[in-house]
Image (cartoon, rainbow, N blue to C red):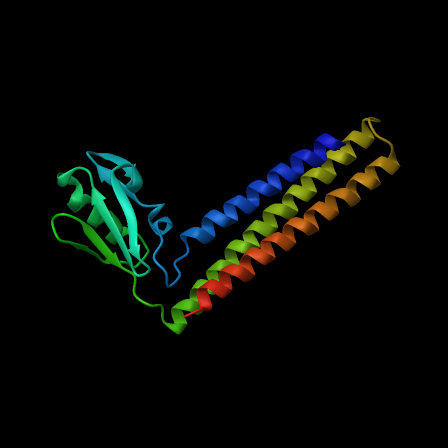
Length: 184
């Protein structure tokens, strides 16, 4: 029974970690290097993560700078950023690529808040699916006579408590991200 609970908790932690990654990619009014995490550059025919071929930094809260290690890669990096759905425009001065993050409009903030809610809802659905899997595993153990009916009910209560705790954590993360998005 403890193995089922431990497995469910591990999987719920992974669902929350995934939610945090999605939130990190959501653009707020502030420049962060995590905005560029999902970008892959076509480098000599191989899709390469941007941070493996350039140094990415944020000199101030509105600017991201990218310094590719290979001078020939400047054009490819620019093209990859323009193709991404971030809506950012890179400026190349020959030595470094600068991306200035414009302040978000009210409509864009509301759209981003909706996207954040969608990500949080997907994480909650994943957590509920994990609860269902754990309850099914407990039911199977009871049917196999590995645990008693009382143990099954106790295990299901524990799984429900775990589920409630992780859904509350997802809601907290959403509230924090929405506050961050809506602040000017």
